[in-house]
Image (cartoon, rainbow over all chains, first blue to last red; front, top):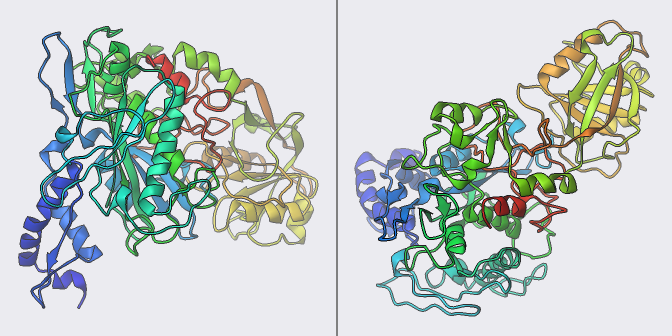
Length: 131
Length: 485
């Protein structure tokens, strides 16, 4: 039986509670720790990669990721806290031949998309694309 | 540590200490770049992880750190030192930095992320009213720290698991040396220089997918980003026009006086392929090409010869992934070989046609898209090679249908267009990155991939980059000067 099957829906709910803290903490610049409860032993342990990915997909994004207007100052200065949604992400992918290619994308969603779907070859620079 | 809890920072060598509730971040050492601007790396990692990872490592490439954490910090400091020596500001620039687990798989990973933490408009001495500036630049222009007290000007996070775990691109991770000798690994200092530049202001805060501005105010960037078809800057366009220009191939140029003046100093002539000859017909003319990272660079006088296709596939295509047979060898000997992209490395194709006696190689793309280059390395390749688009390849092949075994009547010249610099528009302004095929998250806040030599602020980190951010090698600092640095 594969790990995905082992990870039941009920277990996921429990895991999300545990993971939500860590993911939001990470968004605020803090180091987080994700743990899962092993169904067979009942003990906490580090998540498998499949479990971690499942948790990532199910955990609501922290509100702090969105840009937030700051209070206008007495001198009229206006500010916005951009948060992580506006950051640029450097994503690297290893092709089947072992060569690495990178791309710089805008926004967290694009970074996740780039992980799953590397940019078409014609979007990458020639020093990385070798075939 | 929550950013709001960041303590007041001192200059070089400052040590930040903070006691935050159980198991969250400890503030650690910070360093500052000596020069015209002081840049402080604010270590936001908890004890034992990230910058504080005690795992022993061997000093590498001029990085004398003996723990993983110290080497990471040294690399950050080197990038901060380079920018600190380049910029001028009376306000200390704070970069909140941490190594944390970021998304990754066995074959891909988020290396890191960075950007401005806050943007400000209508602060004291703001050059333009109603315009967003990144907080580091706003602070320089105001002559005082504009950022919210305790907030960093730039935030950056890098992947602490990269290369160290089976599910996070195992194998070579970041190269932490300072000597640009990364080989096939990822040079962290180069990545940091790129990411810090975004945080310093090498980015628009206007959404380039929708064209919407934040609170209906333009970014300082938008005054200089020109839709070169409409001849209007982004501040003069509607949201729909902005969004459209962001996906128009070669449609956006940087139109700042300092970059414009530096472009001829930095960029080389554009490579081209010119087709002529009695049989060229409608295919005759000048073609945009992608350069190869192997073999000799194109030069003038051009390499000139009959363009002859390799044919080694049932459908008439030619991959040249194996040594050429007698017929193909006869065709390409002394001529320029036309091959199709696919199946094997570009260098393999080049080796095979070179061995058959070809004097140059043209690779036709096998998928739609814009002009791109040929990667790879092979010191044994002595003939020039270029790449053309799939569409151009079809045009060229149509002209080659009637040919003898040794001649096509179509003459290819591979050389330089001295009237145009690589990566510039018709007016000589450097282009920004606007791929015509939609790519989620592709950002106009990059230079074009057609620039030659490769620029730090292209959307990919290229192996041939130096750690320079100024002319005559690089155009990053000139752009930052255009927006006010």
